[in-house]
Length: 159
Image 1 (cartoon, rainbow, N blue to C red):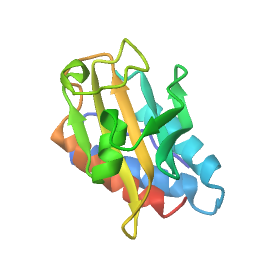
Image 2: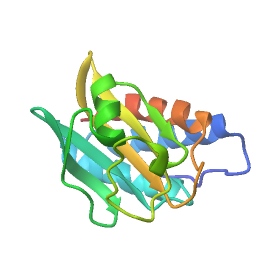
Image 3: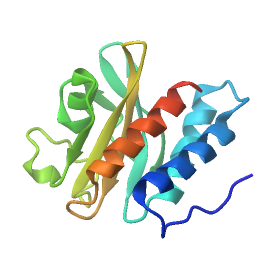
């Protein structure tokens, strides 16, 4: 079912391969938690040099921890607080080169140095966010933002 991603190819092609794998993995399954769990596992295998990948899901006026791969994490994040809460409130992706320089950063794992958060939005409604942390500064690029925004568009069709 899955082919190994060719990491020697360009970033766009890698994300296209990942998108195809994600869509194939989730097609036919209706349970959002099963699909988010498999998505986090697939992303954990796709990325190197990360220490956490997962989802926070909107529950009334806050984000609540969903399926993830990594160390135990913060359970609830208010909208507008930290990187995840800010991305959720603005419904805009955020790439943070140095989490210590981000005002109000919530340190769930002291080893995290950089972060990318991509909102999950369907028909203008926030569903949650995809959050990926790295123990390296400047780990995530503009190509990662673009690729992950494509990935989340596929994902929201299955949750």
